Image (cartoon, rainbow, N blue to C red; front, side, top):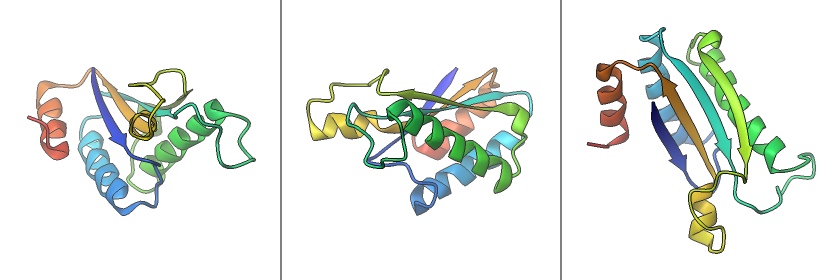
Length: 130
């Protein structure tokens, strides 16, 4: 299992740096149809700014579903490989008591099951990890 996080104040599919990473990850994953990917949305403990969202759980679920939809429609991923999951504020990485902590807790994670070692190395190389 590999967890890749996109950390920032907001994950927006139209964000150019997010799209570049999403495109690269999608291109790698399309070459490995045996893997299953959970796209997991997380928030901080602040109420969502938009009134159309019932709560952070709803908001994080929609964020994850938006990423999955883009991976399928824009980058030709197989929908049967993907699941969208929203965790809301319930799995923070750190305390929500500071602005930096809240920023770290607002993220999208890709959890990849049954990857080959070559796939894991390629993903780490793309995101800049050793």
